[in-house]
Length: 482
Ligand code: SAH
Image: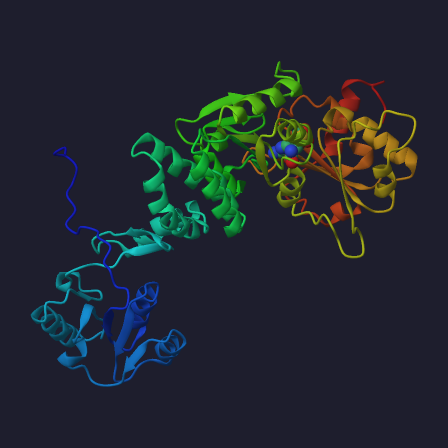
């Protein structure tokens, strides 16, 4: 142990309380807070209070705990394994502390650390798994903040998983050699098929998967998660995506996924960029499919990170087909798609009562042929249209929609770098849209939303698209007309 690591003055332990009596003296808010905390355990609670608050009374009744309605007397502590002095009265709390100590029972006095034999932690409860956070009484607020952070990291299914593990312990010790074989089993148990089955709420499936692992006890099987990274802001990542990133051996990502999101992965995870940015050299889709299959067969846990939602213009269909054909297990984790982020940035209702009740996700790259695609007809009947990868085809989108009968005055909202601090917003009409193509000042991804519902957006923070149209027209007098 090194000299410069500060020593703990309170050492954390887990105390057996199952079926044991725990006494709380007090009838107010503090007593209720302690009752709630202790209520997470299987201890028998006894609360001593001459005049308990109604809220405490109700909690005790609902939770089947005992209420002793009397002035405190030392006999109330009989048989207890822990005592809490929560009367709010300093001299009474002192007396309780003295009585408990005389009876050899560890005691905690609420808000009086100097009188405490022990402190109560903030708890992340995934029974039988528990994380207890202590600050030696120094910072209950800090403890709550840390608690909230850890709570977010730990899946609710960890509790049932730990309980299931306990039921497999004897068998594992019996069947598997101590050391690496047993460790490999538990690693596969806690981060492989049993864990995934429980995450999906399938206890029977988890038990089956665990039995299978036990009988095979071979190398762990690979698994690919196709994960939506959201539109760019790292806090628009889902909690599930974050958890998978922390468990991944390999992260395979597109160019649009920001560094900050990738950095959420395990520090020692391998990171592979597979490009896919316009104009840059990148792996072909077939190469990406082959890479994922190979990683899966190598037994790797892979997060295949895609911007936005993986199932929206993400070519996830091809990757899933390749994985299915190869018999590699996979799952899909949704993400916030760019259209939703752009709508949020514009406070733009994508559906609007009486105006628009359907929505189209399109690229606009299918407009070149002679016939109008179905989505153009939907647009004319009032759907809100979100155009992905639409910058280079902005003029086509506008002219074909107008030709098909949509008014040139239809409202249009454009967002570059939606969800990021660097975002830029533009508003205008369908007639202004072609100016997007000639802009050299937009380097980030661009989302275009078209439709009457766009008129319900907030234009306080956006620039008019038309301003640029006029400038462009001035610069090239006989320039391409809209
Ligand atoms: N799967 C992604 C879309 C990938 S296609 C999703 O669900 O969002 C790439 C296109 O998405 C870009 O050309 C752009 O039109 C859009 N896009 C992605 N991120 C964006 C962002 N932060 N702001 C605006 N558009 C974005």
